[in-house]
Image 1: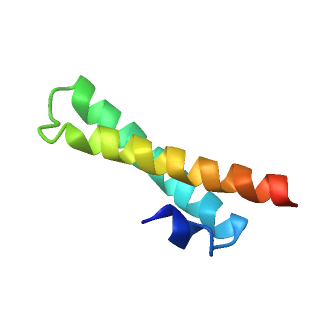
Image 2 (image 1 turned 135 degrees about the vertical axis):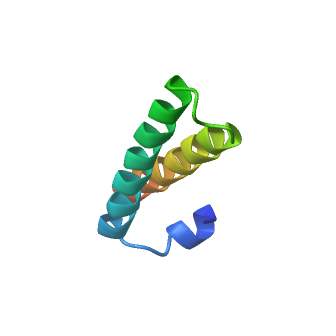
Length: 64
């Protein structure tokens, strides 16, 4: 999802998405540690999505 689309969502919705991405990141890291993760690019994509959400949340908190 693009940052412009995220800016239209509420902080509650973004926090729910962030929580889901953090859970997914944990699963991916566990799979990588056990050698079961073949698509390692998913880790980087997940991390970027987390950073994007945190950036939008920070922008929203500074506006308020």
